[in-house]
Length: 344
Image (spheres, rainbow, N blue to C red):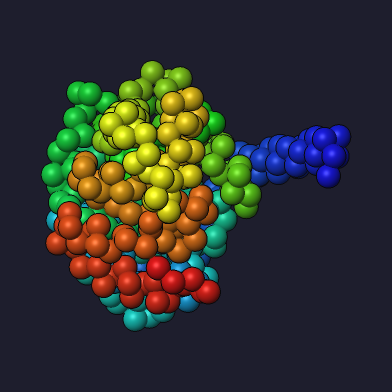
């Protein structure tokens, strides 16, 4: 494909994405009470009296609830949150519902429209009075963990320092908090722009639009509204630590990486970090985050697909065992279900 054809293809793709987004947006704005929830089950207690809610989004092609998900839910409960569980699966087995009931205040099944942000939106609509909450967590099953106490982690998310906290942040495209775990304090929950954003979320089926308009767009809109955003494991701090570490090694011995199988990767990573080219921290920084910083999660996609080709992910189990008492069999058993033509 020549440059001209590439530009034409890119223009058509952007135009198509724009049309889809505006069409979805108009459907949301002018539809009467839109929601894709098709089933609901109630837990032991309702949501009306609670002050801390965790919305947890799930998807499994077979309608299963894996043990690593149940462990995550238990940790959220132990941290003092009532759980609003929402699945994008086509079905939820009766046995799965019974397993979930003791952990959840409300269980929703919805059609998979809008991916996680569509699910977050439909779940938030179920909360009687969002502005009356002390805290709201939005989380999903795209990570394994937590490997450490969630209560200890959340205690570091000081409301005096920021209104919205993520676990990690990113500078890819624009600055944003990565949406697999977000914590909202009351200042955010009572902000007009917070409610406007969720009203405007459209149920697009294009992942690129979900990332740009919802994940990245959310942080940009909250920043523009004057809200303070912070990450518990900030990108810049970990990137600078890696730069200093790699630079020190090369200064001490210019040939230290010559025999390493990942030498080309290390050179590429160092050059990109030095040039200020952003990378995905939850993928590229997974090992230093776990080993040095007490990072509590491991991205599921890093093991199941590793789309960025990050080396040495085969050592995930030994790394997790070195830093945590987490039962790595919860991860291994899930991988047995989902891996195809891949061993890790």
